[in-house]
Structures are given as C-alpha cells and as structure tokens.
Image (cartoon, rainbow, N blue to C red; front, side, top):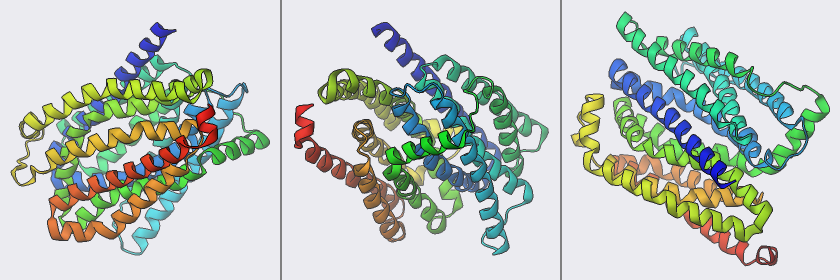
Length: 415
C-alpha cells in the first residue's frame, strides 16, 4: 500500500512536471514569437478560458476527485462524463454568443477565426481537464502522463512550425491550439469512461455535485475575480505590454504550480481515504505531514527564483525587466501564501463543508474589485503585487477563523 502510494505520488509529480513544463515552454515560445503586446492580448483572451475552467472544476472535477473515491455505483463516472459533455457544449455556445455580442457592441474586435477558436478552446479545456482528473480519481496516472505528453509535445512542435513557416500570429496560434486539443481529445475519448445519457441518472448526479459544490460554484466566479481582476485592471492602467511582462514573470515563478497542482490532484483522494479509515484526526495528521514535506522543495524553488530569476527571464524570453523587478520577490511571497491555503481547502472539501471557501473568496473578490484600480493608479507595480498578497492574507484569515470554529464543534472533537 505504501509503495503504491509513493509510486502514484511520483507519477503525479512527473505528470504535473509535464503539464507545468509544457505550459512554461509554450509561454516562452509565444512571448518570443508574438511580442509583448500580442502575448498580453493572448493572456487576456485566455482568461475567458480560465473562467470556464474554474467553474468546471468546481462543479465537475473537484467533486469527482473527492466523491469518486467514495462512490460505489458502477456507472457514476459514465454519468459524470455525460454531464461534462453537456457542460462543454453549453460553454462553447455561451462563449461564441458572448464574443459575438462584444463584437456587435464594438467592445472588442474578434475575427471569426479567433472567436471560433476561443469558443472551441473553452469547451475543449473542460473535456481535457475531465480526462486528466478521471485518471487521477481512478489512480490511472500513467494514462494521464501519456495524454499530457502527447498534447504538449504536439503543441510545442506546432508553435515552432508556425514560426519557421512565418505564420506566427495570435490568430494562427489559437487555431493551432484548437487542432492540438481536438487531436488529443479524440484519443482520450477511447481511454475514458463511456457515455451514459440516462436523464434520471444525469439529473441525480448533477444534483449530488451541486449539493457538494454549491458554494464552490459561486466561489469559482469569485476566485476568478480575485485572482485575475488585478491583471485585467493592469491592462487598462499599465498597458497590454505590462500584462505581457507580468505574465512572463508569473510563468517563471509559476513553476511552483508543479507542486500546487499535484497537491490539488493527489491530496483530495488521499485525504478522503485517510478520513474514511482514521477519521478527522487521521486526515489532519496526513495534511500536516504532507504540508511540512512539500514546504521544503517550495522554499528551495522560491530562493532559487529570487537569486537567478532576472537572469532566467533575460535568457529565456529576451526581455529586460529592470523596471519590473519588484514582481520577482512579490510573486515569491504570494506563492507562500497560496501554498498555506491549499491544506485548508482540501480539509473543507473532504468534510463537504465548502462554505468557508466561498466566504474567503467573496472577501477577496470584493477587495479586488474595490482596490485594484486605486492601488494600480497610485502605486503601479507595487500596488499590483501588494494587492494580490493582501487578497491571499484575507483568504487565510477566513480559513483559519472557520477552522477554529469547526475544530471547537462537538462533532469535530468526537471524530
């Protein structure tokens, strides 16, 4: 059992290295080939996809990781898959409709190719995320590794090919990404569960997922707002090129997400099993032990980024960030706060008490909406970094307070 757990953990880390490394390499190529302004536009467009993905994670994949390990119904995964397909189709329609309305109102200028690619990518990302989380919930992590290696390998080769052929533009990149997604989804469809469009089953599963994640769904909207509104506001106050530089620094510092996302993928299943076998005390012991162990490589990575981050950005992206250096220590501090919040969220989700997560994000989103533009206008990049850190501090404060209330409850003490 222990050797199997270590094997799955190693595979999970390796898979996340493929994903994070693929995204990292993609960011380098796009920043170098498109230029800062076009890369900044790509970053802002991708936020639409991140919004859809955050909603999908709240309603589909996060419940799947927790409930899937507890569910004994043989057709549960097939029913969730059917629900996922329906949500992906709805996402395509809403993204296309929203982009068309924005075009008509002259809020943005989308070509048909960009609009269709954006809508397709929003839907495809949901399906792609489902296949990965399905593999993790079934502990078939080796399949996730194969899917991710194929996807990012073809994507990187395609981007390099566009540059060599002289067709590296924002529109062509979006089309290429759509083709890569379509290819890997067609393959993954044969490896995932079968579809089960039984209306009653789909309805009941949707109801169970909604009961589990009713607060997480609202949280997804608030999380996207608290996490991304500062970047959107920076585009208006500091300029699109500044967004490109912020995204470059964020990507390099974001290698920490190899740890964060692996934690989010592996810990919920393991925490749920610890809770089922040893109760709340066993789950808390698991979370504390894992948090301490994973803090060591995180600290090493952050210190390395502080010392050589500026050199790496110049070497990899060919960008001078002398006027943006505050972003490096700023993101290092930010990710320490982000790390501290992950065990709390997994604890709350395992206990199926997701309301505290909602409370934390509503406070963070409210602060972002009210403070982003004043902070950016007054303090520039310092306001950007400081604002993001304050959001995380507010979030941790809410988590700690709710945990204390929960730990003092009779049911908690008896478990």
